[in-house]
Length: 486
Image 1 (cartoon, one colour):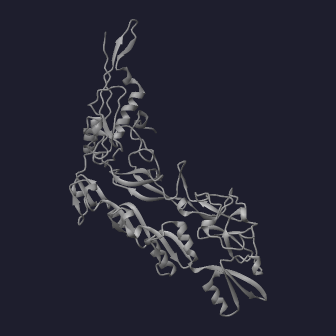
Image 2 (spheres, helix red, strand yellow; image 1 turned 45 degrees about the vertical axis):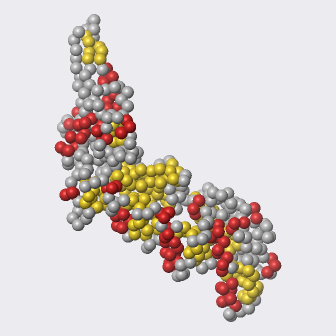
Image 3 (cartoon, one colour; image 1 turned 90 degrees about the vertical axis):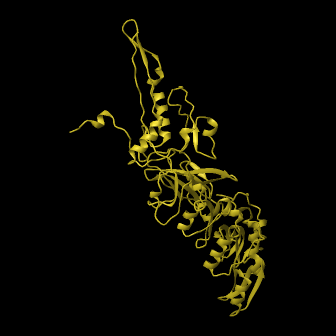
C-alpha cells in the first residue's frame, strides 16, 4: 500500500481586539472602539473600556427642539452632532416627549409637547398643550372649541355660505348682514343657499372630506352616505363616523377616515386607485424594501453594497445602516461606522420593527471553548460552529456572529487573527489492483462542500478567506489572471 498526502490550507487575515473607546476618532467617527489611544482625536475623551460602559457613549433619547422631534436609542454624540439635546432617560420618561393634545387655533393634533411647540411657533399660535388628553380621537374632538358652522350672507344678490368659525363669520358681518348656524353645513337644504351636496372630495388635516358645490368642507368622506340628507346637513363628530375599519382605512374606496399613526394620510388618487367618489384616498404610508413591506415609522437593518443599502452579507468594505419607513419613503437615519465594529441590530417592539446601531462584541469569540459561553449575548456576539465533517482544526468552535472588518494595510495584525482558522487535512490514497489509486481516508476533504464549509468559517472571522468585497470584486487570483495577455 502506498500513501499519498494532500494538504489543504486556508490562510486568513485578522485583527487585534480594541481596548480603548474614543469619544471621537481622528477619522471623525464618534464613540468607536480602537486598539490604541493614538487613534483618538485630541481634545476628546478616551476610556480604556468598551464604549457601552462609558457615560458619553450611552444610548438615550435625542430631543431636537428645532425640528420638533424625539428619537429613542440614540448615542449622545450622534445626537449632539446633529443639533439635538441628549437625555439618558427612556423616551417614555421625558415630559417633552410624552404625547398629548396640541390645539392649533381651530385644529388639534395628537403629538408630543416638543412637536407642539414647533408647530405652534411655525403657525403663529401660543402653545396650547393638553396633557390630560390621552387618545387621538379625544384630541380631535377639541377642534370644536372654536366651533365651525354655516356662515350665511348675501353676495352678488344671491344667498351664499361659507363653512367657517363663528369668529371668522363675525368679521364678514362687519361689512354685511350675516347669520351663523353652529355645527350646520352649508349644504343644508334648510339654509336656502346656493350650496348643495356633491360627489367631490378634498384633503383636510390628513383625512378625506366631502366638499359641497361651493367648495366648502363637509363631513368625512363616507361613500355610503353620499345621498344622505342628514349627513349633508349636520357636522358629524369624527368619533361617530361609521366607515372606520380601525386600521387607518388604507387605500379604502369608501372611507376617508385616515390615521397617520396607523400608517395612512390623505393624498390624490394614483393609477389603479379608484375611490367610489372624488379624487382622494387614504394614502398608504408603508414602504416596500427588497421585496418586504415595512410599516410607517418602522426601522430595520441594512448593509451597504456597491453604494446601495441592503446586502445580507458582511462583505469586506461593507457597513451597517439603520433604515426607516416614514411617509411612504425609505430613509437612512443612522450609519454604523468604523469597520463594522459598530453593527445594526433589530427587534420587534409592540408589533413594529425597531433597529439601532450598537457595538459589535466579537473580539474574544475564538477564545471560547464551550457553547454556553460562546452564545452569551450579554458578553459577546458569537455563533457556535457545528462541524458536520468533525475536522481537527485547532479546536475552533466559536466565531463572530457579525464578521468584523480590518484595515487592509495592517497586514501583520490581520494575519495573526485570521490564522486561527487555518485548516490542515491529510488525505490518504491506496493503489489498487490494476494500478488505480483510490482514496481511503479523509476523502471528504476533496469535496467542494467541505472546502466551502471551511471557507465560510474563515469569512466569519472577518475579512478572511476566499470571497468578494462589497462592490463584487473578487479577492483572489486564478492562473489566467496572472498570465500576461497581449
